[in-house]
Length: 631
Image (tube, rainbow, N blue to C red; front, side, top):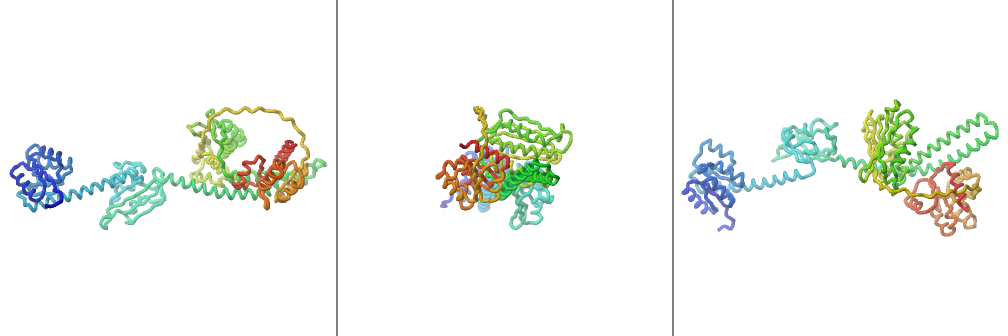
């Protein structure tokens, strides 16, 4: 006996003798003819109790349903193959039977060999179809589940399938898209041709890869590929697989911008350092010469040439101050941003920024303010003010001359949970999409030469990002621009009460100043600016240390940070060990190129650190303040 399991057969035959004869023949063939039914109800009852591998069905049976109707019920409910066994072969009966998709059609009386062949083919074909259906279901489920969008077309370019991801991405349902040309459903923006990628594949019969394209209707950026679908060497259609890469491209642009900012920050730090030293000399000497010439003009009548020289020096001093501001922006741009824990009230910061920029508006427009009370952000007041002033100045410059009441710049702030949203909206000239894409890049500006440096918005971007926030912009040409700043909210807390105490004014005495810098012109400029004091200038920190070791004492010690042989840090550390009192009197002068080690050093020591160039008046005032505080 064969060890293979017997295939079960349900016989549906209303002639009892014929049914028993079939059962005997099937048993001799090795089949398990486990039941005989003479009607549709009996057949369904037997199939419910035990689903057969195949049904041997007579077309003419008892009851309300004939064999063809019964076969349909069995196929729909139990997915069982049916082989018809009948004495009727007329065209109408055969046509009805074909519509039920039978697995065999045998004429009575049937020969055993024909019966065996029909049953084996039916069982085999049904199993193959079942496996194919399982694979199709698995494939369809996979396509429905994947995140990538999938669209298929036939040879005419008509859509035959699209998965849910494709529906969501192109904004249409499968019911609306099926049967339509792909070029009507999936349209790419220029400079692509009007034809869809699927049409190109059908025309050229080769795969097509598009790294980046934009959907015409939604402006979403997609990455896609399309390929022909082949069957036995013949093309039967095409498939397109694509996904939404809009956010990915946005993140990529942000990373590229961050890389450029980092590179330019390094360059800006170097430029600022190289400019600061000679600029300090220019500013100091310009002020000195201007003061001297004015003193001469006061002693006697100023000639025309002397007056012209004074005017030229005033212009030189103004130009040097402008260079200092540009260098200051470079310094701010290049300095590593530090996360601050200081909380700032939005209302006062906005009010200060509006007051500071009021002169820029004049008759161009007016500023309206709407700030929810009590809002505070986790960003120090100086940096927040810098951002707001920059945005308000940009808004003022974007407003054309016209009626003041019509041209409005609106600044608002509102709380949104853990974030505070600040908006600066103008009705100015606006920006094109091309300009808008570059506004946060350093040195990018649309202003005339000499008007802007292109660093303002880049600095704003760096400040806001370093504080854990976001800054974005929307703009339309001829409509206006809106900047949106989102910053972490700070919890409100009562302001500390600081007791004030009056300090009696003290007269400034002539002090002994030690200046240490490897730039001789810097030392000479310091001597001229502080000519009311006794200034000793040295170009080597080792020489300064030797003077102090020899017993010399100074009221104030001005030390550069970056010097050959002995740096300002090494000089200070030696003073802490050998002359602690002198170490407390050190004021550091930096050229803005701060390494991480220098920045950490300055952050932990109590001493003052000044960044070159220093305005003459401020420098003198600081020295006088230090002299009043030392015994």
